[in-house]
Length: 383
Image (tube, rainbow, N blue to C red; front, top):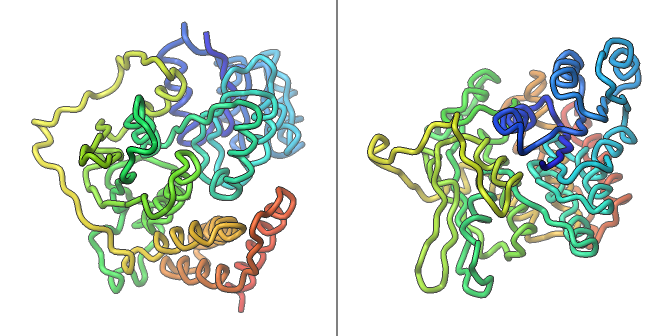
């Protein structure tokens, strides 16, 4: 029985992780969880799974839950609360499925506590990859990828030697606007941007997919997870989302991981690694039924956010922190109707241009840069 702490239990990855726990109740137990502001859903999960610890964002919500929960779950709140959930002493593995850079600090605390980390929160590695990976090495902790692309690469690397790798090939669906020119993106609505052709994801990630920033964050994450330089990471447009990513070796062999577009498979592999469990409730891949797979070269002029991510990663230091914070602030503004879709790119570019680079920022500096970048983006919007 593997005991799980789930950070971000009410989000897209969180709810799919709960599906896996329900599918294999003899294998997994939820012992701790954190949520944001969806208190009704938090109560429902707590009553069903009866975790020992539940953390919420606000003190008022914690008090509300304490007064209505019939389970013996202890309720915490704020940053201390999410750390309490991440470091719950019974937990074997922490699934970091929160949205945004808020996942960084609890992940570092969980690493110090010796927990295995199943990481779905891209921003943790994008914002402070050097700190996170150093901590993982110091404490002998494994970081297991949950994103389908990184899970695919992780699986394709099993039993192989790093020195034989020619490049990592990350596939991209192209998102909601893959068939539109830049001119056709003028005036697109939030509803159009949220209409992803392949995947069911949260609003922020779906917008990132439409701008291709999601793929850019994955490139930076892959750099840290697999210790691969950026010149050996490539992105290919693949409409069907059947090949989740590939590894090309210097003998010309390419090993790919294929599957239906279902995040639960990648989540389960992270929870069961190095073994596998059957998935009785999942659709199996039928290549004959699919018939054809399509691939296209990535257009970095069309998808400027992907180019920004490569630039930020290669510059390194504090620049990826700025990239991520500016993107989060800009996407929130787009979802709130404050800016147009194409302005997301402009705001990120301006934030990066104005930033004074710090080569090896410590945690306090990263958090300060994150706050300042968000304020700068709001200032740019109001100028």
